[in-house]
Length: 347
Image (cartoon, rainbow, N blue to C red):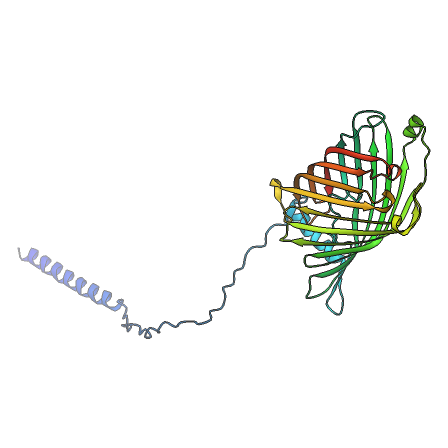
């Protein structure tokens, strides 16, 4: 028993010594973590009211270039082309080559003004009960000068035109016209002054069928025109012409016979119409010395589509009534009265 008690005493002593050593060892590896003081925050600032805040700046991503052939692509190209054809003078005025629009637009109801037009008429002829009148031509702006700080501009144009009368089977007559007008516009007013040439011819088939003789008809005229637009819808205009070169069959070359004049109006909305279009009415009254002062009357009623910023940007369908002497030079003695329907394309 004494031996067992000694063993137990030794084990108890050993366990106590091991616990003491383990406690001391663990105590020397405990880190000494210092206490960090709590951060001191600055006092809150009062809210300031900005009287003139700076505008915000947004950095957007550059858009992709427009697809070739789209409206955006054509617009960009046209804008760059216009800039290349314009120059600024030292005074700040703009000189432009090949301007995109006209300062003086040919009136709709003047039968001998340049345009693209087709008319089927009720006028009888030696071949049948109807006649077709066509116009093939147009006006091109050459040079424009715009004054800085003003809506005043001056422009030089050139036009060409052939008007043709057709029977159901052949050509009856055709008149050729050429002109070089100087045009001007300021606000609702516009004017032109220029040289115009007209020569008239008759078809070979009609010469043979009616045993006619072709006679020379030619005029070289100085023409002045003036117009005004009211309320951006109603245009009133007038022309005066004098032929300094005059070759008209069976007509004396007097001052009265060399002159001509006309007045007229046209009503429609002059802003871009879009697909809907707009109704229009136009009329013209003309007196010519080489037709003994006979009154020639034209009236048109129809529907019109207009883009004022595009060449030949006006399309229309209409009915027309004409009464007076023939507008064709070879038939200036013939009295005509007819109805017609057709379509046209104007500047």
